[in-house]
Length: 157
Image (cartoon, rainbow, N blue to C red; front, side):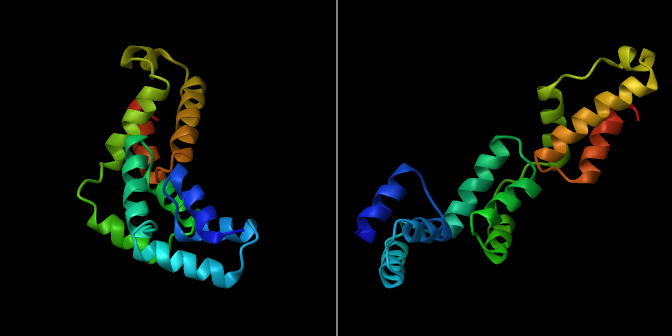
């Protein structure tokens, strides 16, 4: 199979990392030398750029109200190096406040009861609601300290 055609087809759907492209070409049966040449050519023309991919992925993640922990983990899973991630993260123009983003995600997901309802609610019920909210926020990649701050604020625990 022609590595260039296969790569063009794969990249036409959406941006990919260098590792994703290399893995895809290997799965399609392309030779190591063809993969190396194709990747080098596509990098030269700017069709593969892990830094730009990383920047776009951070913006996408922030838009989806994900925590930086999850975004970084997903970028690493896609083959972006820690150095590139760190460099791009430090150069971002806008990084939302993680506490505010987590609070917004918590309220958006399942609005907590108002303060009067919480005051009347049994402690165990508040703990169950807080645990559910905590799990949801943790799965979105927010750090433990941010999750605990949000839970304390919402459920007075």
